[in-house]
Length: 67
Image: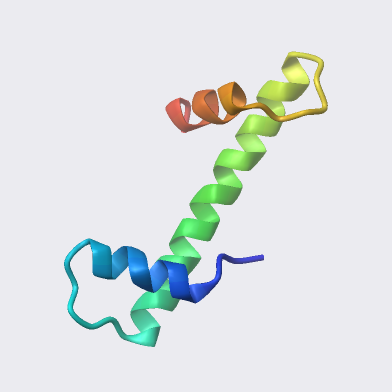
């Protein structure tokens, strides 16, 4: 699963780019998706340690701090 490419392009433009190639969007998309999956997996571990099936914002915050 990946994030739609259009929002990725807007992120790059919001950062100051005038034009963004499709390759650039795809490359950032791959990176962002991989990072999000890593955070999600770690957050699931934290939720499981707390004996919960529901991943909460606090699990995401802890995962980000611990990666």
